[in-house]
Length: 197
Image (cartoon, rainbow, N blue to C red; front, side, top):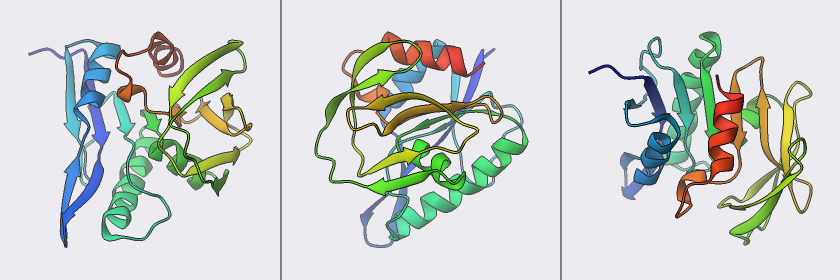
C-alpha cells in the first residue's frame, strides 16, 4: 500500500494501576490527522528507539505534565526529549499540541508559568490573520514569553501565547486541542498546511 504521509505520534503515558504504565492516544487525534492529510496516512506510535528516517511528521500529543514528577510524567518527558532530539537533527516537521507546545517552549528557554486555568473554551487572536477563533484548552500552564527565534502566531485574552512556529526548526505548536472539537476546524487545517511543508 502506498502511503502519502507517514506520521509518528509521541503518545500520552497513563498509570491506570500502580506501577503499570501504558501508552495512550486519543482516537480523535488519529481522525483529526486523517482529516488534515487524507486516509492514505500511516500512523506510527513512537518510542525512544524509533527510526524516524521515513517519517514525514512528528506529532507531540497532549496529555501529561511537564513539571509534575510522577512515573508516567518522567517517562513521557524522557521519551519526548529523545524523540525530539532526533527529530531536530533530521529536520523533521513537528506538530506540538498542548504538552508538545509547552515542552518545545520550555527546552528553548521560553517562560512558562502555572495558572489556575478553569476556562475550557476561550478565544485566541491570530496576529497576522486578524482573526478571532474559539478553541478548547485543558492545561495548567501558560507560555508568557517565547524564544526570540520563534514566531508568535496567536494569543489569548490575557496575552499568553497560544500558537507559535519556527521555520528554522520546522515546527508548529498550539496550546489548544484541535482533535477534541466535535467538528474539526478549517483554521487548524490551514495552520498545518501553511506552517508544516
